Amino acid sequence: MPIDELDGRLIELFAAEPRIGVLEASRRLGVARGTVQARLDRLARDGVIGGYGPEIDPAALGYGVTAFVTLQLQQAGGHDPVGARLAQVPEVIEAHTITGPGDMLCRVVARSNTDLQRVIDVLVDVAGVERASSVISLATQVPYRTLPLVRAAARASGRGKASGPPPR
Image (cartoon, rainbow, N blue to C red):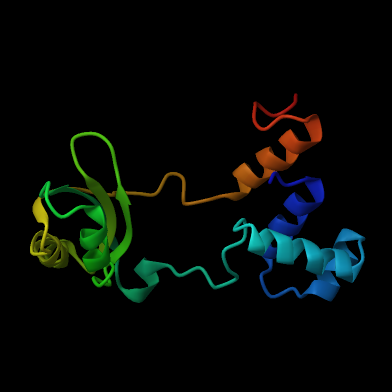
């Protein structure tokens, strides 16, 4: 279900201030408290909002190295068992089944380049993984973000379209 302009404003407000509260959000948005609560409930039920937790910076925890590791998997056994095993490795912060030369792409963090070698060794040791290749991130040019997508979806709903470039 597409979001509308009010949903977009609500999501932006809670993204900027996750602890704001429903009453204050209703005041700032100029709508009833019940409207804010109903919208939040619908957005959560529909999976648009997945949580209100804090954003964690791995570098602030001592994990200053980020790498992307492409895994080639054994053809027998499937992706799900490997994914379940990778979920047990704390340094794996994302894993995706992919198309292309590899089978799975993982974003991992490590304390140093030496520690990255240890993490990669752990990944290669996972049952079902045949080979790994990695690239180290030197700098984050565009951090993970969803608000531009929220804004585009809210604009599109106002135009009666599902997608397209923003109006000029």
